[in-house]
Image (cartoon, rainbow, N blue to C red):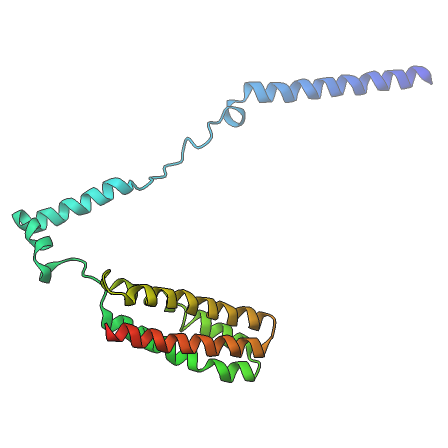
Length: 193
């Protein structure tokens, strides 16, 4: 019986050696799978951003001919004009109106509505106030006062947000009162300039 076991072991080992040799041969001799070049058939065109900008500039110059300098010197034909204070005051007014809704939401403990007002209608308040401050002349002493008010209003609004995160209505109302007073002062100062 030992002879038969030994013979089957030899047959099994011969089969495993033969299978290993066949696998090695298929890897070496088959160029299709083993020697494929990764991404050889990929044809991705990446945009050339710099060339795109240069093409747009050329088309602007071509469309204007020799008048390209006149476009930038003539105030009526400028591509970008400074910030329109009327639009900024409209946005500021919308933020003030949204601010007035906060006490009702705070007293009714509607925390998600408070957060929605702070991030939604009042989300651009800081930007609008900063742009209005930029319109004030550097020599004007009100500029630094308005700039300080924008920072303080922002801190009070962050205080409201922190208070509602802790579900502290009293603290949120106190921060609201401070923000409202400072906002009224800011609007008076900026509109007087």
